[in-house]
Image (cartoon, rainbow, N blue to C red):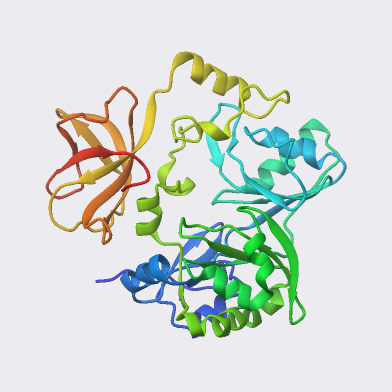
Length: 368
């Protein structure tokens, strides 16, 4: 019997919620205390549209935490392990956030609007509370708030054509993670070259929640010549691409170094940041785990509900976070955190998936 999720007033709705319902959303999940569409009844077709065409996604759950005030830049730098001092207005950067023990607590995109105004476009955890507490404890002159901002994503190889038809050819000149203010029939927006896929695309940051259905319908109409359709961040594509999902792939002990985010950690940064001392200890002692891809044996696998142990000679040596069947590779693929000393050519690995154990071979990320 299929499971259902109850839709009630206790869970926050996106400004695009009514539009997604009208367009036939078939399943929701909950992320950042909000409903997010999971699929529209045809997950395989939605994957194909993302890989070969263009899709539109309600990703309003990607909430913004605004840092505003004379110390906004200082707070932003103290929150992240990445050196962001050279970030320019109109530019975004992927920034790991850690707790004082060096454990990853979010991996947002930072958007710099001005020297005294930043947004953190967050994954699934309560970073507004964290940032507010840090700002207060350190005496920073910063107001931490959640602005009226809700992203809608346009993703896929034809996304640039759709967005250019709406706003003009200037969107082609936006560099990755950069953004620009825009307006569409009186709807205030930011247009950013970013998104939850590696297929290329844009995010339209709606700045007036009352215009959610209007924006959805504008994009839908502009995309008709390109066979646009609704969808959602796609698990198959993200695993193929090796993209980190903070809430799925990172357990409560994971640090950014073992998750493969070392290039976004600047331990030589002149400024201090939360978790810096702890991450230096991790480097000194050696990383204990590493994030890898796995090819799994056997027939077509179903997406797992729970994390699964990765075993070697009967001993647990890691955890598989998520597995799917890849129609592009025609193989079962997965992401896992395993002991760091296990070599890429290790034989005898198996994943306990709940049925028969699946033999596992390590793959580089992204899968190819």
